[in-house]
Length: 69
Image (tube, rainbow, N blue to C red; front, top):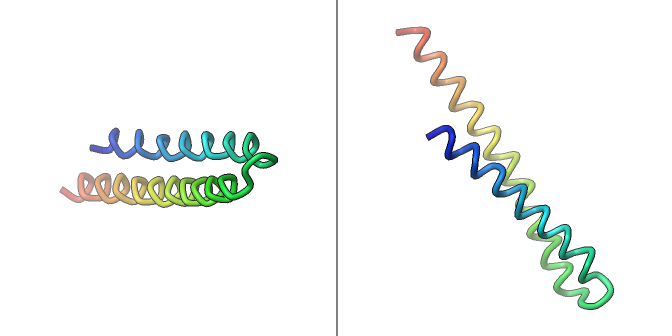
C-alpha cells in the first residue's frame, strides 16, 4: 500500500509539471485558461506535499508498531 501512496505523490508532480507547461504556452494566447492551470499547479503541489507528509507519518507509525511488538 505504501508503494501506491508513493506513486500517487509523483502523479501530482506530473500534473503540476503539465500545468506549468500549459501556463507558459497559453499565457499570451488565452490568459483565462492560464489562470485555470495556475490553480491546478498550486493544488497539485499542495497535494504532493500533503500526501508525502501523510505517507511519512504512516511509515513512521508502522515502524513504531513493529518495534513495540
